[in-house]
Image 1: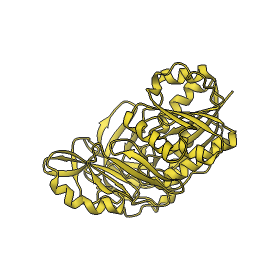
Image 2 (image 1 turned 90 degrees about the vertical axis):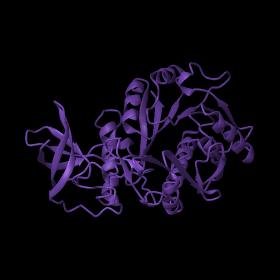
Image 3 (image 1 turned 180 degrees about the vertical axis):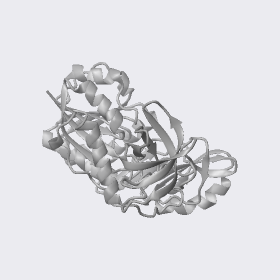
Image 4 (image 1 turned 45 degrees about the vertical axis):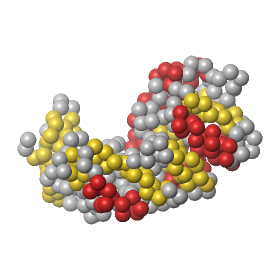
Length: 387
């Protein structure tokens, strides 16, 4: 397809720049900077929008900077890493655009008042934060999938990875012949490659160690995860929560930290991953919280009624990127728990779920935590109050 001039207007959620084609149609592409003119070759053209590849920047913007990573933006080809969407602008600008995106979803979407939106929590470091990484192999290339989800970008280093993983990449690249390899790092275990059933010890600043299965979820940015945990505990303390029910509880981090920070708080956690629940029970026992924090294997999305004898003051949900099931949002409305604390890694599905809950819950507070700096993603902590 031919290339067209596009004046970049801003960033959409996910990190794509957007602007208008000469015919007025909106066009999305990676690597742009607001206020500059780019030549974009279209790869997709629909009735209402188009997508393209940045061929060259004909009039660079004043806010453009040189990315640290050589794989971040490669004008003229789609073979650049889509993981880092903001390395061509400063971190201050990145955080500002992420806050604007959250506001667009919630405030402009009539789901929250502007006064409910707190200032964003910045990451302490833009690089060297990622404590786990997955590489793929295909056609003698080892690295990450590009924007087309087919081409593997051959890489030697990743500036987002913690230094220990980044230093280990070259040696382990040579060992990978086909398929995938998983890297994980903790201060106690060091770099673990394809950990399998191994139990690792993750460390969170201010809150100590947690046992975590190598194959189970744990936040990829422990520094911001600690800030988020402080935010959750402070929210529960301010609301006077004594009984907490945590869905998608993982290894019990938020429940255990809340119980540690709030005397008398008791919690009940549910998680589908049985190995994670085993570690949650172990973490509770290690911290002397076994009687106050109970955990059980279960599918949060299939719960119809509250556990027998439980009348929680708040339900804490931390779902995967797809958000809550419609069945669970209907259950939340029936339960009429005074508060829902929603941790989201995807503001689009958060907004969808808030629309489903809007007639029963209002957004009292909402804050962005930049768990994934330099990328198009971020974490959100929302407090919902029963109306």
